[in-house]
Image (cartoon, rainbow, N blue to C red; front, side, top):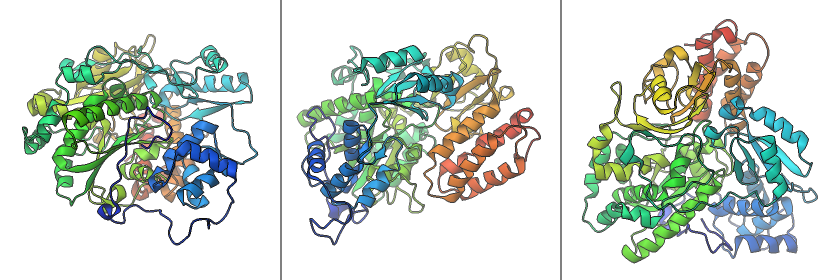
Length: 616
């Protein structure tokens, strides 16, 4: 990520020649000479401010969102005069800039005469925080804070184990209360994410697997493993051996395939097979790493990244070396300000190390910052966002393995999939396959939140049941709570009742029950909760996060959320019709999976919604 005026920035960008990537990068302007921009005129003060923030040009089209972040961070909003100046500097039309800026929730476009808020406070209103009193906190803050402080409801911020969560500026407040939020607002200087220190010892979850990695009582900025500690435990030895030809790329690929490791972002596609497919495509090939992690209930990637960034980076480099990747793009959700700072420092350490010990071997690494759009967790929408555009999913085929980022064959991976590459390659596939229960194989990182004593990330055997997970890794149910039901895979993965707490949690085991494991975000609810209300919360989330590109999802999620919120018996025939259309006709997984909560409530909690509809 190009970091104008930021000497501490750790991520660098090396452009891939246009002749190498063909015509895949869309959106450039042609046929208009300098000084002939149409539309709004640019004033000198706005232009000077923009140039000071984004640095000297020329500016690539895919840098647009990065530049919007600099403006938004600096000014508290996106003022149209500044957007006009940015359009002029980037040789874009004002319409192109506005259509991108208006798509993402974390950007606020304002007229020139509007005053930006002095501070923005966001309160999470998704599943875990809703159960923990997030709505009440939001209402009380709106009444207690001055009009100069903007208070917003926010979809999941990825800290569900610490619910309810408020974010003051960029600082997350764990288990937030009215007094703690008011205190940080009053301080004025408590709005930045606190920096993290380096740990003295390496973080090595594989050495202790299976285990409970966190317990819900962790600090907001845990210590992280720097380069020296990581190397002391054999870090980057595998990558160096591959670069120097002392280790076979084919041998690593064979271990990956033998391990059966599947994509851990939700899709579950076999990682080794994906490597082989992309390796067979023509060069140059690119890599896109998905750390958007916007699924309500999911926080495992943040937990690993905050503590152990180099293990992930080595996994990405090993994959790049085996597949023949020319450049790596990392897409990190905007809510993870602390993790972004850690990752930038880790990449800076890696660059210095590579310059000394493996000159020329490190592919260029570019960090892209999301801007608050759940749909960008979908791989093609993420690629559109990396390219500086609206994060709208692409129609397929072609698949991104054939034509992805900038039109080139692209290896797309979730963060955690790459995190395990080093351990699988060095410990062997048999190490990974040696874990598992109930006929399943491997390890799974479960993000557990809700009504349990010890929420957090649990590194457990694949195929473990919900009952086993709660009893063995979470200290049981929270005091005074009895298991009523659970989401096995976040808001999109459906809901199951307590009587199905002994179903193995893994890929392909939950589909017969109308659910899927997805990113393994387990949200546990009790007799104190309403399945109906939680399903409504989930549908409101989908309606809010729909990109609006396709009618079935845009209209269906909004209409379903309205119907689900009405008192009395659900309108089952209409909800069933909406579900069928969304599943059959939506472009991407957001609309296709949204009806899962409807059908699960109809099937497993009919007493809450009146007569049961067709749940087939």
